[in-house]
Image 1: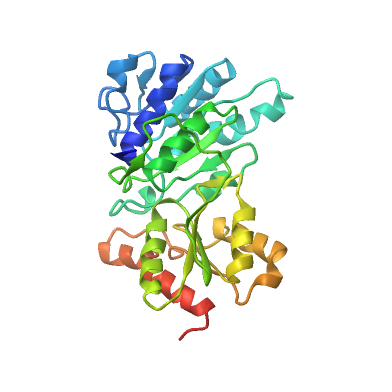
Image 2: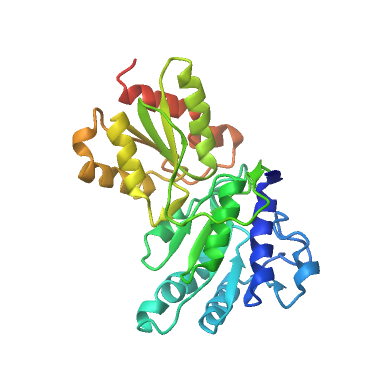
Length: 326
């Protein structure tokens, strides 16, 4: 095992797959000459050349469409959005072409394409650069949605995403690119659609994903001081979702808290809540609690931003609530 940064895990996954398959290429803003806006494609232009690591104009609709068209013709593109906030400019290509083409063509076309880049907030970036899009894309049949939280998962899942014959939305975070973690030096992949129990516990299940899961870990450490045992589940894949891992955990702990960095209405936590009440209602000893951002656009002020985002204190309060501890 070697300790590397999240951005290095992304770069390794792309480079290793590109060495094996000439049909894979990377395209997006600043991915080549600048080594990526967050240096996640560092050195790739030198290794693979400008035909396979391609800088684009600021035109997400254009290069998303080029990617979809090339995927229909036998390539396996990786399309980087500098942020998924910018994917809104190209969302027509993602939703109406990439996601639907296999069905509309009667199975004649697979669309093996990965759209990747950072999602959710990243500090003082304002309302138009701080949105979480997991539930937006997960709402669309035909798309797979992955949100890793650490370098190990990021590399293994990205390699699987690149090999997948369906379109995959792969969401990262600007605030995780410098995170370090152990990653095997040997070849490995992680199966899409499998959650991971990051921390075993017996009193309450806490489900989260992406960078906000760090707040769940902090809360679990704090609650352990009071002899409260939290089982922390990292979804990793939003669609397809691993409901069974959550259900089995709830059957053990009888309580569920869901932590998500998104607006409260119609999000991933809402879907999980429905699935648990349908399939594991009789195991619940308390109502499910979901923790989200405030129901407003993201503020710019650091004071307001701190209040807007969920944190470990919110998780501690939620756990104590489901355990009926004042």
